[in-house]
Image (cartoon, rainbow, N blue to C red):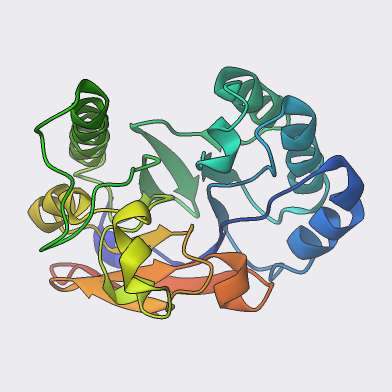
Length: 254
């Protein structure tokens, strides 16, 4: 379709809901408070407290009952804690949530194709503090796993390359801008700029992530806006981005 004909699209985003069986009312309240005009809801990982499917079901029920539009999610480190990520994913999907794991989806919003590329990301560090591909096998395994996240994100971005609006959904941070406020000594464990390479290559319209509870809201990779949407950073409420596709001029995000 003509990109100029795409409507303004409202994207609600938050991460780190940390749902549990004892916090179901709170989960419903947070999702119910999303702007009713939001067209799409993004969940940036850590949807559970300890990675149990019962906790994921709390999130799924809250979104099924309260979300104003389709919900797309990635998992976070908490969601992997109990080594039951497949069950967590199944519980979320049973509630109608699309869960991305190094994958992409396309959502139709008002006749406009919105592409979402999603990956969890991983630790790995930034300039001057990268974990190397050297030494003990366990350390090299972390490096390799991170590389698979980067490659998966690149493939997902390729899949949505022709969409008028392209969004990236992560849990770990791809840039240090949004980590400011966290102790610099732990930045290596909050994300990695290895994730920035496919973002620089494909220049999506918006990147959101969670995980850094004490970080900063706003950053950038080149000209691509990056936002930390961890609920503590947002003050406990979803943030709504207004995105407008423009013919020949990329997308405006506010």
